[in-house]
Length: 437
Image (cartoon, rainbow, N blue to C red; front, side, top):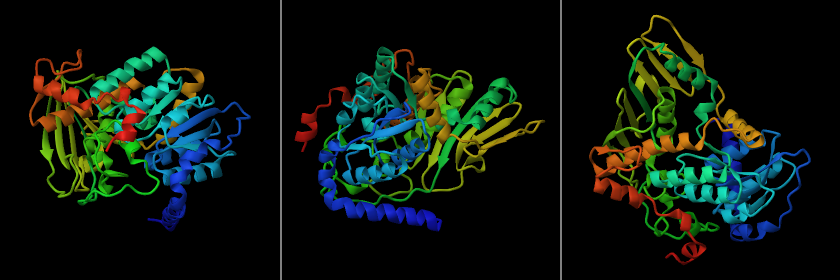
């Protein structure tokens, strides 16, 4: 870690500590803050969710002269205060800070919202934004269940709003050229495609229940999820490893790499899915598997996902990536570039920008009312691959999916599981958040 990054982390920590005593009252009073009007017809943006991903997206937005961030929202008032401070230093006005996303969506001057919350809030917040007439940039997975994602797709069609999904690879020129090469037939017939993520994650330990940190509206954070006492290792940074809030490594990294496979091979959803794995290494509170292999059976190709959270050495010498195995050659692609192997001709490409490009693409889609490169339907289908893999793993057996009906046919157990994942966040009320024990 460089001295600059250490200093940045220290400054953030000091700021959060200093603002903690005032955190509880911040969100309630922030609606009174003034917001300057845009002198150059810039897009007015609201950001919901200010964790690590939300912070990165706001920084990316701040680097363009196309927008003004006019409002931000988070249930953690300390994160809200820090983000407000940082954004105000990068633009000419201080954004309004609120604790409830409905307050942000009530602002008539907001053109579009960026949603970077934990997964279990995605569908509800995106639906509310569409109904409020806002365009949406939505992080993946697009919903916490297949059914909720399908409902969101229907709503987006009805409201005719722009919805771009956070699939940055689709905006990278080296990913685009890799996909074009696969589709050109250069590799011959593709019989197998693999995607993987191999990272040495840290243990989250075991934690007793406790009171939420000062300034955190924990009931609001739970939202559509089932009520449960606060546990520190189920909160910031660790929520992806719990079924109520996230979708494990498969939902975190798998949605991105499996999307590249679907894109290149023009795949919809598979018929059969088999998954094996478990908690092989970590002896902590996490629920999602630290080791997983998922096989997606398509008529003409086998698609495989693998992750390990306790190792650094990945497949094909890459910690995470995608491999297309053709009978005339192999192509390996990740965020550092792509290269062809086992072919009579060489081929490679270096890394291209994906993060700035995806946000610029979103802003252009909003301004021009054109279809995004990474649209909601693509995001939903790639998210569904992850949900299918997790369902097969949790049921402990093969599942057969009817991709026309978006269910498991006559498999009552799998359909019951599919229904149980959708907790109907569309009817979430303030009363539920207030009265939950």
